[in-house]
Length: 473
Image 1 (tube, rainbow, N blue to C red):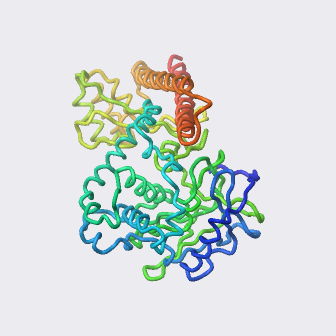
Image 2 (image 1 turned 180 degrees about the vertical axis):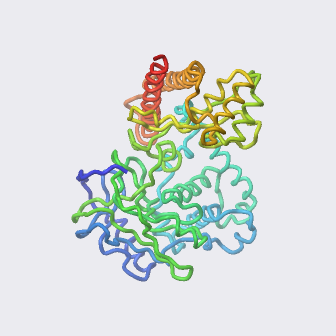
Image 3 (image 1 turned 60 degrees about the horizontal axis):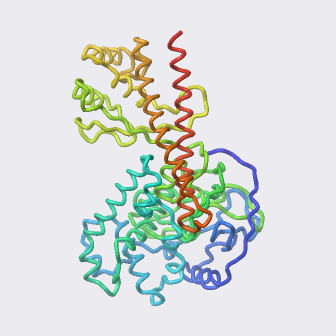
């Protein structure tokens, strides 16, 4: 993460109506004071946390005992029994949220459930309409979103009989309502890099803008409890300004199976009244927008996914696929089987002159792809054996072939640039001063995503051009 000493002055006001019932309820639920350092208020970003007194880096400013977590175990036994053992805890926790939403004020968790963000306040692309997704169709985020939405729909259809069996809990639960509840859980679960464990209470805040990261939060250690939990910080879902700030990334979670307590440790000093921000992982805008519904403009962690295929008409296609598979030259998603001809590589944000943003596997793939004879492919294998065993890891000895491989990448990136540019022009034409709220926000997110992609793609093509010039010498 990048370091920053800039102090963000954020006007805020305490929402008395929310705080008057929520904080006392949290204290009662926890059976103890959960924080003497924080207060709930509202900033220009929505519901937020503020320092109520001086905080020093390293202070434990928030403690959440097990009693203040809503877990998958809270699902009604009859529902859980009919659901069976074939579903992960994330599905169960989504049903728990829906169950308590239906109970309304009769639920012991009503003060918390009522503060969860509404669907129109969440901007994960998993919640975008088909028409809204068309705005990012030139990005592979479009394909990833469709895949994720199809997965959620498959889950919904597989549990529909359970929803119909218990109308007292799940009456009128549509696919969209289930998707919202599932997204609340899944979205927060990924915030901390947890694979099967914690859903943070920071979900209760809107995700309309960005917040830098000043608060160290939990790590995946909590997954050892093998339970999904809705925790306090979900009320303040982080939404960032422009940059992350360096914080201590050590684990701030201590727990046992019988006596679980989640702790949050300050990563910097705060003065009374300062807004306290929650730390996100070092992830790309692709992942942030898919999972959380926000972006960091020009983030140093930003990436673009590039799809590369072995053409059907390539007479060496079978040989190349087999070779690539055996040597594990793969990108983000990799090969699922030897005869797969699609692969996805990460193109990173790289401001250096070294070309590190263009990954070694991506360049190796291009070198293999540009071979025109079995002898050339065999030569690559021999060179790999003589070096470190990695196929096409180093520049080809045949400079013409090396130039051709990188021209291939250049043309691929140019094609992506042109498609992104056309999409941006379309968004500009569609923009209107009358647009507001959710529609305006998602259009701006689409524009920011494509603009960020363009910056990375143009940087990559500039490096490729310079590299090709050096090969001519």
